[in-house]
Amino acid sequence: MPRRSGGTYSAASMADIAFLLLIFFLVATTMDVDSGLSRKLPPMPTEDVDPDQSRIKERNIFVVLINANDQLMVENQQTSIFDLRKKAKEFIANPANKDDLPEKTIKDIPFFGEYPVSKGIISLQNDRGTSYNMYIKVQNELAAAYNELRNELAMDKFGRRFDELDKERADAVQSIYPQVISEAEPKNIGGK
Image (cartoon, rainbow, N blue to C red):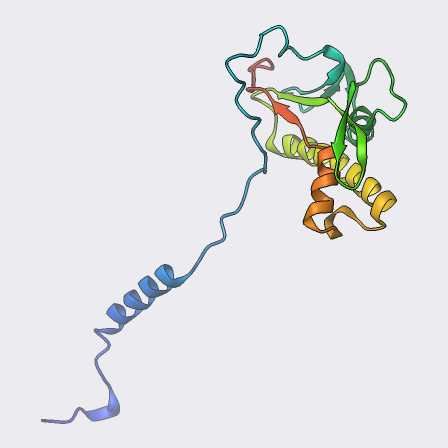
């Protein structure tokens, strides 16, 4: 076989090798796709429930509206995003048992015994023209309200933050402040 002069070699198969390496790395690489909002759907109502009994009293609903201009209305009052968490916490906890805030039922909860639990539901409604950024800000503030209440209760009862509790204690705190957020289908009110 004759030798080539100048030490050169053929690079024709390099493209094939690069293509095979690309396919290998695409197949071998795992991608983390955990995204979105974590929400637990309520159970389906049973058929034997009377429709009049399943109606929710108005005082047990905290209405949050976001319009197409990203303006926030809470309980029919224009509100700043910075005030939303405080108002949501007051609604969820109802510390003074006010008549215009949610009712409470007594439940037997591990580590707490018989404890009053709110019947409150946060109803979030937005316009189709609402920006994603504003929608996420509102979601974050509502979730933060629940998290702060859970942390306060965990610190009072167990001397630890909610996220530091074992599963049984965390479940007990969570059953006192269950995150109940109802989201309605977006409406096309603002015209965007």
